[in-house]
Amino acid sequence: MKNISILLIILLVAACGKKDLTKIQQKQEQLTQKEKDLVSLKKEILDLRREIQSLDTNARDNAIAVMAMEVKKDVFKNPFEVQGIVKSDRNVLISPEVPAKIVSLYVREGQKVSKGEIIATLDGSTANAQINELEGSLELAKINFEKQQRLWNKNIGSEMQYLQAKNQYEQLQNAIQTAQTQLGKYSLRSPISGTVDEIMANEGEFVGSMTGGPVARIVNLSDIKIVASASEAYLGKLNVGQEVSISFPSIELNTTEEVSAVSNVINANNRTFSFYVKPTKHIKMMKPNLLAMITAHDYEANDAISVPTKLIRIANGQHFIYTIKTNGNKKTVQKSIIEIDKQFPNETIIKSGLVPGDTVITEGVNSVIVGDEVKIITE
Image (cartoon, rainbow, N blue to C red; front, side, top):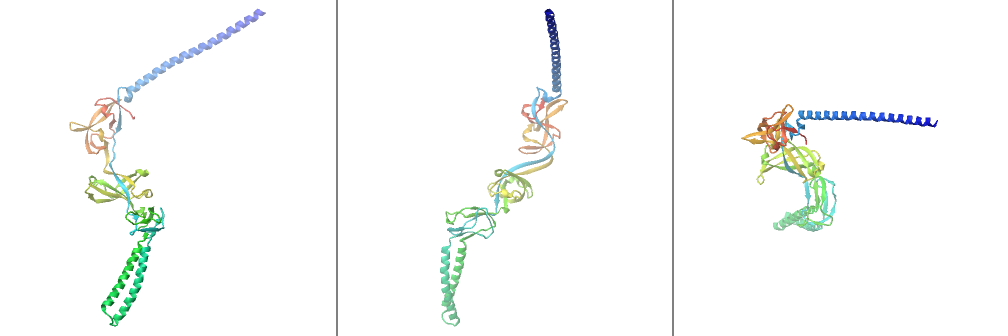
């Protein structure tokens, strides 16, 4: 019985071993097939790459890499830039006409004031004392004049006495009027309506002397403008109503406005003329003496073909430019003879030799010659 059990165990182990061997063989067969498939796939990939290289110039290793642009007609504007300054005709420094000490300040920075409004008073005690003294003398002169006038009307006394009394009385009247006018100078008034931009002195300070400065600055931005100077070469190319682009670097503001006025006089010292732009937008952001960079255009053309001036070559008195000729799947360099219409430092307008759709080499032009095969890249 024991022998029979051992025999059964041996038969069972043999059966399991055969089953595992069958699974391994199956996996090996699958691996072999996948490897065959991989080899076939790699061959297909290689064939596809070769086909792409034969069809696409850009994929060829021997083609020279260049950058290019397609020629098209468009509106052309040639820009030039000049520097301008924000100014205001209503930017007033208020200084006293007479030296004196500030008694009271009635305004502060940012406060709006009206024309004629008192912004400060000065110590006018000396002027007041002078007026009081003159008024006392005037009273006595008036009594004397009236007395001499009554006597003269009765033919008593001399004409000289009458005239002297009259003259003294009138002189004192004029002197008081002058003194009162002088006293008015001790009240500083705003000459314009606007905003107090800066207070430059304090109560108790002595102003109006040779060493004293202004008391305050009043600004009215409703009359602000941008003043710029351009070379006389641009005469006739800047006109009233022409649109210009304006950049304010300090406040990172860009806007467009129209030229409001153009000067008719050329500055003999620097051969420039002035032109003006009156802002209509963003006025609150602008301050007097703020720097402005103005971009205008001295030439405009519709439906123009233009290329960068640096791309144009000249040989044997002819201008030419390198373009790309496509022949089937091959791109080669060719020389296109051109005729120039207008030339500027950065751009040149082409009169003939290029048509919309032509491809002009823009980068790598110094590395190619006519007939070279090229591929177009974007970076």
